[in-house]
Image (cartoon, rainbow, N blue to C red; front, side):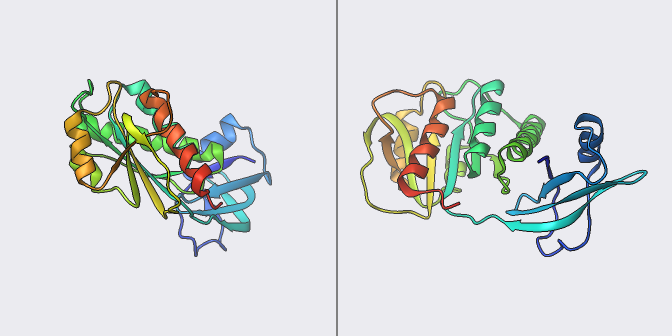
Amino acid sequence: MPRFYYFFNSADTEAPLVLPPEAVHHAMRVLRMRQGDAVEVFNGKGCAVKGTIRFATDFAEVIPQEVIMQPRGLKLVLMQALVANEKMDWIIEKACELGYAEIAVFPSDRGEVRLTGEKAVKRVERWNKIAVSACQQCGENYLPNIRFCTSLKEAAAYAEGLKFVLSPVGKTYDSSEVPAAVTFAIGPEGGLSPKEIEILVDGGFYSRKLGSRVLRTETAAIAAASFAQTLWGDFR
């Protein structure tokens, strides 16, 4: 079933939902949908509406038939060091598919990419578009909060719950604690510097590794989410 993102209040699901122009174009020109076809619209806040699409002269709307509220369980927070454009886009996409609720991107000591001013704003806009596309595809009804932070300390302010800084020199994790939220801080290709790891550890992070292998930065977020959801459940 085709899915589209359109923000609406969860309480306003009885009246038809008028789709934004880009969704109308995709439905008509790309998917070649017809009057009465089944469709799903999600608001990025956990609510989705299943219904049928109705085309008019200059707009399209979805007639609601079923409302679905997706529960939120284990909250995943990703602190990701800024890396090259293509890798960063891929990380954002996969983080959305795996259910990260917060993504804080920050420049790191060993990172080779820098963003300032208007470039940072445009990059976040791009990441949000990637997030919408990823959530449409995978069936996730929550859009993550994506932000660019100017420093590691600023990014760390968004950390929640049980906090890990992933490091190949850290210890493997072994605990029976079941957290409500988990944060993973991941460095660039060369890893976080000893100073950065020290800052995070002083801020309550555990310096840990996920196994015997040294993972690439674009793999670490995937492995971390899989680790957390396997150990503590996704509750969905």
